[in-house]
Amino acid sequence: MRKKLVVLTILLLCLGVSLFAQESLESLGFSLDVVWLFIGGILVFIMQAGFALVETGLTRAKNATNITMKNVMDFCFGAIVYWAIGWGFMYGADALGGLIGSDQFFHSPMALDIETGNFYKSWFFQVVFAATAATIVSGAMAERTQFKSYLIYTCFISAFIYPISGHWVWGGGWLAELGFHDFAGSTVVHSVGGWAALMGAIILGPRLGKYVKGEDGKVSVKAFPGHNIPYAALGVLLLFFGWFGFNSASTGFATVGEGGIWSGLAIARVAVTTCLAAAAGAAAALVFSWIWFKKPDASMTLNGLLAGLVAITAPCAVVSPGAAIIIGLIGGVLVVLSVEFIDKVLKVDDPVGAVSVHLVCGIFGTIAVGIWGNAEADGVLGLLHGGGASLLGTQLIGILAVGAWAGITSLLLFTLIKLIFGLRVSAKEELMGLDISEHKSEAYTGFQIFTNT
Image (cartoon, rainbow, N blue to C red; front, side, top):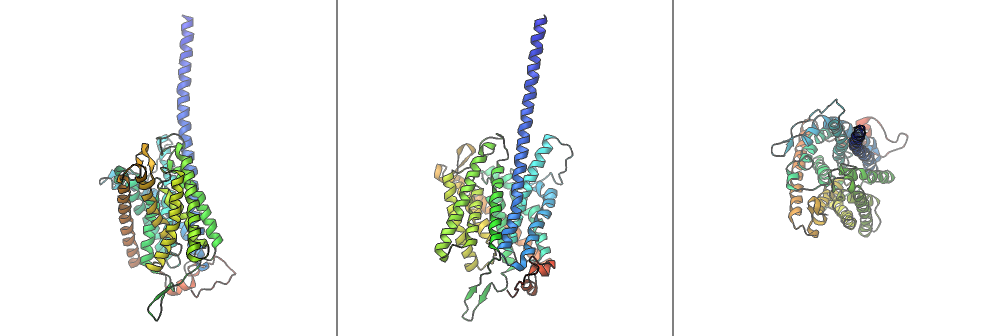
């Protein structure tokens, strides 16, 4: 009898240890997932500094403070409205057939349980994505936008425009049900920001002196070189650094998670394809601009690197390293062609090339999923890997739908802001520079800055 009791006790102890170990492993796994998303969110947050430096460097010195202020405040205002409204529209329960989220507004749970932890880690990672979509617009509207009007716009994109189309893809909405694939946001983030940037630049009009009509009726295009290319280069490198969080942490898990591309198993693959596409984009833009302009153009090369990053953002988890290089090479050439076309043919003044980088290459990257996608187990099989045209067709539907939503809503928003509050500064203020006219401050105190253009 005593032996049986001893055996039974040992068995119960083993069972207890086993259950405790299982719970400990689950807790450890959850903790690793939280830490991984937190690190990813921090990396994406650093991209705000990258955008600020890129936009400041590629514009004129008299507007440096204004550019910096916009990049700081679009995150600060955007974070608040995304917590209050944007998250609910993006990740709330489906309503209207998958068009919009309908709950989780002003989400403020107090209990520190696992479900609350899930919300906190996901919200922190998503708010920096919302800020990225909003800050893309700053560069395209640089040097002539009223500061107050920009702040009004950036609140609306973080609260409504970005979250609603984001729900369609990442919140379980109708495009997700259709099989549309955008792993980290070529369309959800970059194209949305790019469409808004295009609409804003069109409504604003070009900077003074940008397009001059001569006596012969021909319009000449004047270049306004950026005042600090080292700033721009440092900003691009910060963006490159942050993009490893942008793409790699979009797995959502550091552990096995849901398996396949939505797990920690995909982190290394995503990092490799992201790195190779960016490098290829810079190399292609360098060589192509060298041939086109007879000199290796610095700003085009920097935008080429960003073009490769934007293009690989959608397919980064479902393509091979070789395909990533091809995607980056095409993106690098595409951004040079696009900058020239938008500036000299369409006559749309985009000081930093934001529309070309984020909209044009975002569209290309989304299409690339339907061509080079090679993840059959996850239902992502492109044209070149036996998947036929089905996925490519779905990608095109998503591009058109999100483009229509972001383009139309942004156009209406900028038109209303222009009518109600005013959108553009006066000619005198623009010539003076927005640092003085909008902020009564100079970025480079003690240096003479010429303000005749």
